[in-house]
Length: 451
Image 1 (tube, rainbow, N blue to C red):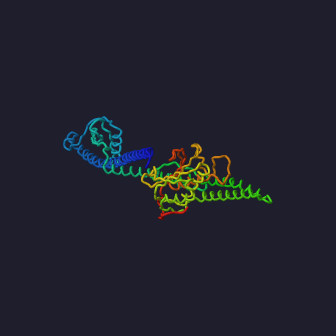
Image 2: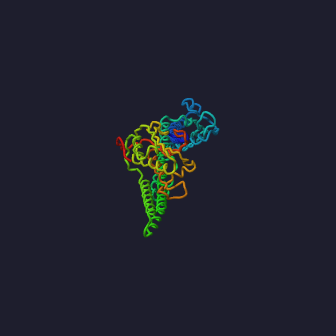
Image 3: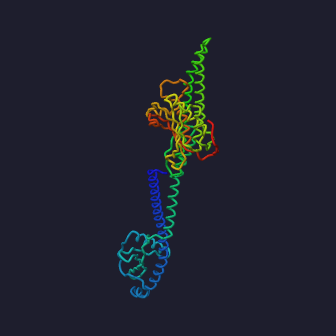
């Protein structure tokens, strides 16, 4: 579900494109209306030229035999006898008058003089060819109509504006972000640290960008983990190998030295196993639907009930059984090494907070130790990072919680901690593994699993 800020941003973008589309439609309408008005005006002037030229010929022929008053009364033509009439009017009328004069000059054998009439009605005075006295003929020129617009032009303007706004939307919200994403994908593997892209565009493009950014972050995290693993494994193997080399240099080692050498070999085996487990992960393990309480019971079957008590709610979930069993085993080893027994393993049903309808689970491992300080918890989840300053020991290389956190993330959850009272009232500390059923994907069904 989109956040309120993202919804507001999407609404603002929609309003912006609607405004741009409306402005484009209005501009298109104005341009089309202007072009149509010009064509109509030219056609009108051409038609008027034919009518006025006919009236001029008729009036000039009549004036050869009759006075102007009689010609005006008989023909109905508005004639004016005398000097130059008052001229004026708006610039548009002056332009129409000049165009009408050009049309008359083209149709007649002589070029008459035209003057835009001042006042109402709107028109122009045309000078007749009269041998006795100046005679002027008035011809009405209608005002060009520019509003309301023609319905067809209005429809064309709306279609053009909508098309322009759609193309602009596709370019700004889809095409350009996808081009940036394509360029960023082309740089993956060529740059040491690909840049994270800013989320822009439509919802689908934003989700695609978010997935790309998540991929970039995972690549950076994997690169950091790889560098940390290489440095950590070299550091952790150095101490037991040095001790073994020194003991092998002794010609006849004592029994105590032999026991220490065996302990160092066990530490090497443990460190190597932890390293291979962390490096290999559980990405290739197939999810299985099984009783989760039986899996945890089998994983902890080697411990005495006085050391580990079980409080398991019957649950069936789709999990990677080997990875989950190893993660719980690492939590138990950490608790036995750094906490205080007896331990308590708890399994409960817990729907995920982001998906209330999904099948989740919660695994808690309690001990009676002081636990991990809140400010040290992030450091405890970093691979090869130990909370004590001295490294080495019995093969504890700082991967226990890191492996458990990775397995929890693979099951859609995470690793956390909590403090609280145990059933007998004693204070306790718990490492909590949250997860959910793995879906979608190929799932097989089984009644149990071996860790």
